[in-house]
Length: 83
Image (tube, rainbow, N blue to C red; front, side, top):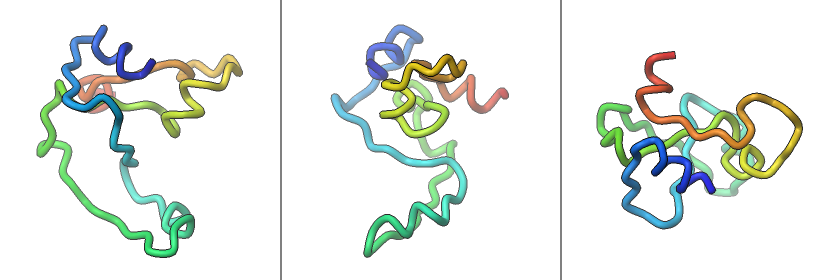
């Protein structure tokens, strides 16, 4: 669903399944995995037409139906960077 929404907004994903990342530090995320680590990549190192964003984790964002405005939404890099 997220992939299709991204394509509708002009996105051109190169993968059928996503790599999931967070924006900014998420220290508690490192505790989830025994060998957790962090990697920093500048947004300018990504091609804007190949990267999409969700508010919150992809899977709950696409699956929960709780009337929060970001549920079921996919954002482009331009939408994220211009907020």
